[in-house]
Amino acid sequence: MNSIQYIALALCTVSIFGGCNAQLSATFYDSTCPNVSSVARGILVQARQTDVRIGAKIIRLHFHDCMVNGCDASLLLDDAEGIDSEKDEPPNTTIDGYSVLDDIKTAVENVCPGVVSCADIVALAAQISVSLDGGPTNPWEVQFGRRDSTTANSTGTIAIPSPFDDFATVRRKFTDVGLDATDMVALSGNCI
Image 1 (cartoon, one colour):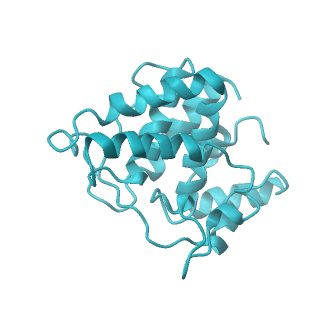
Image 2 (tube, rainbow, N blue to C red):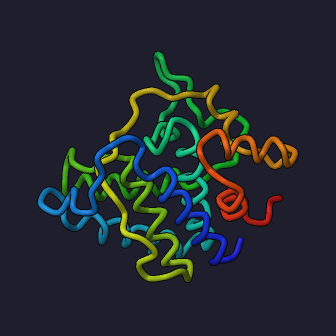
Image 3 (tube, rainbow, N blue to C red):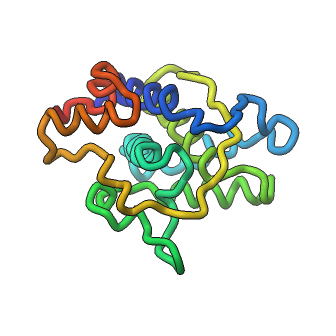
C-alpha cells in the first residue's frame, strides 16, 4: 500500500466511522489533556524507527475495529470472563500494532490519567500515521469523545472484508455498513 492508499483508507475510515453515534468534538480534550496529540506523535515517531510499516498496521487496525460495532476499541480487548476477543478471529489474527497503541496509552496515562479513551487513541494514531507516512501534515481533524467498549463481538468480525471474499461479498460488506463503491475502492487499496 502506498501513501495515497493510506490517506484514502484513513480518510474514509474516519469520515464513515468517526461518529459512532457519539457527540464528538475536535476540542474534547483541550482542557483535560491538551497534549494528547504530541504524546501520541512522539511514540509513533519512535516506533517508526524500528518498524517502517507501523503506520499501515495502525490504520488497518483502526479499520478493522471500526467495521465491527463502530470505532470503539473493542478490537483491543483480550479474552476474559464474558469477553470473546475479536483479536482471535481470522480477519484479525494478522493484525499488528497493539504494542505501539499500548505504549501510547501508557504515555498518555502518565500525563492525563483516566482521561483519554483507547478508541480516541486508535483514531488519533491512524491520523498521525498518515502524516508520518508521507501524507498531508494535517490530513483531517480528529474528532474526540469516543467511549471504549467493554465487550467484544468476535462473531461480528465476519463483517470485515476478507482477501478470500469474492467481489460481490466484499461489496455487500461495505454496503452493509453504509459505504459505497468509492469507499470500497479507497479502503480496499489494491486488494480487489
